[in-house]
Image (cartoon, rainbow, N blue to C red; front, top):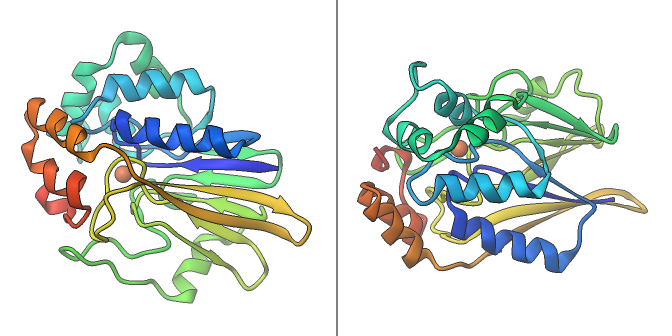
Length: 240
Ligand SMILES: [Fe+2]
């Protein structure tokens, strides 16, 4: 079984197109999308239309909750912008999503951790323009009781995988559409595959027309996203 894992598209339709083209070339049995689908200034409605058309396994992220209900604490300008762009059907699609899901009895998917869509897992969250690695104990604690050989998470936008001492594989595919802190503006996603010796992962980075995406963000009133989109070195504090 071969599964494409996408997360944190953040409304970046051109980045999503590049990833979907690469996924089509690779051939997969299923696509899983780990949330924060539309909150962003490039093309939220375009991203929603593509994702709905995919028929992927999808869960909600913290920003999806905030787009659905912009009165919630944490919702910001870009969540409100995304909400304004979506039609009724797209908003209903977002509102219907659950926070976690299971695929074929072997894969568990969440946005942040299994119990919290705002909590980072494989990396500590941003300190300015840096992240730091959590301890083995911190990582393991969140996986207690998640009895699946593959556990997927997103939220930090930092692609990384690790294998727990009992063999379970945890994968964060990084972000399709919003690159932070690592100087890699490419669209990121992962492929997990069950082979003879168990589950393996490939973390992919796909180039796309970042200049066009940055100009779309500026045209929609968010020029401050240009640094993140063009260079991937921005910290979350600069997105406003
Ligand atoms: Fe996100």
